[in-house]
Amino acid sequence: MVIDELITLGLNFLKKEEFNNPPLELRLILAKLLNVDKSYIYSHGERQVTKDIENQFMEMVKKRSKGYPIQYILGEKEFMGLDFYIEDGVLIPRPDTEILVEYIINFINRYYKGDRINVLDIGAGSGAISLSIAKYCPGAYVYGIDIDDAAIKVSNINKERFDLSNVELLKGDLFEPILRLNMQNEFQIIVSNPPYIPKEEIEQLQSEVKLYEPKLALDGGIDGLNFYRKITEDAKKLLIKNGLLIYEIGYNQGKQVSNILDNEGYKNINILKDLQGRDRVAMGFSFDCEL
Image (cartoon, rainbow, N blue to C red):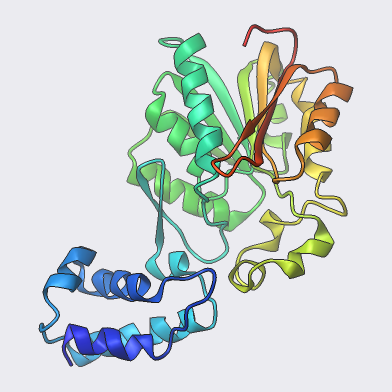
């Protein structure tokens, strides 16, 4: 079978849903199997493929037809210009999270350029936040913490993939690994993209999210705010004076997370919007700080 025939066959299995783009996804799958760029698939439609490639392709297409995320099938996701290795069991990086990371990188370049600083990422997952900061801010030493074995494994694979030496990935619950290191009041920045979906809303998510992505990385408790409360309170022990605590938040959580920060004594609280004009990032400083 030639490439064009295989793509047509795949289209019979994949129906257009709100979360997928069958023509593009089929070409990405086949490009991965053939170890070529997707542009090759467009320009070499008459190339014959082996029976083994056909079989592998159709296995992947059938998985995708059931809602299995394309990122898990491909084993990677681009984030901040970096190709992250991704596998089943680890939250897939989202483009919206780039807003958070870009702010931190700009903040470091503005206030700490050339300085050796400590950054803490709570809930490292694939390492998207931790490793992007480390890559683009070589003066920062980044500690990434996650409670999940799969997340630590994947983030370490990505650390090696990007050849980073200014990152340390630690397994544990929230701040526990850092408290063991006696690093109180030593962090200029603490960042987290914690689980923030209210428990009862998880079943309303797209099927590819609720069925396949780890609930551990989604479930924020009854109101979705459990981790914001815990982290905001404990972060004060680890931040330096004027240290930045910054979160990714749900689109309707800006006021609630701002109130949590305010109640814990943080100052200069601010909300950043995403490209759709929705709340996406909340931040505050441990003491008064010039923005």
